[in-house]
Length: 157
Image 1 (tube, rainbow, N blue to C red):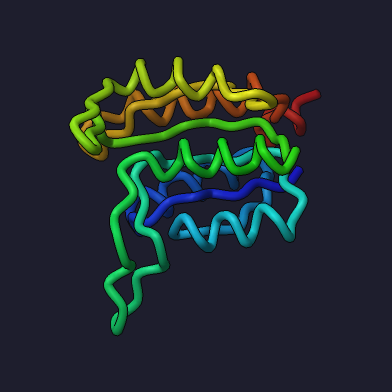
Image 2 (cartoon, helix red, strand yellow):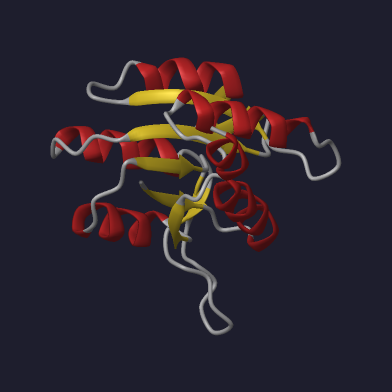
């Protein structure tokens, strides 16, 4: 299976990639709204691991990434729904609340909103915290729920 990790934070991306590797899951990376849309449109992904808040463009040493999209992950899923592209999704965010244009939503409210988008299949929503490791266990459960098997478990069978 092939996954796309949509994440602009290098530390979080590295941690997510490490867990995907435990499952033998090949993953690509998109670091912004634009790069995610481009990769989703041109690739075939079974699973997307999606951050909610994203820059518009990839951040480089010479470019700041454009406007911050507080609901960029939601915009990606809505756009994919409109063009009939579907995939399993695991939402991972370090934020508890999201705000834009006087609209504030909790992480759980965002997940409920995402589940209402036609064609979207949310496997899990995970609160990321580099200081608290339980998110890693939740990520492993979510990958298992999406049909993945850890490599160490495959060898035991």
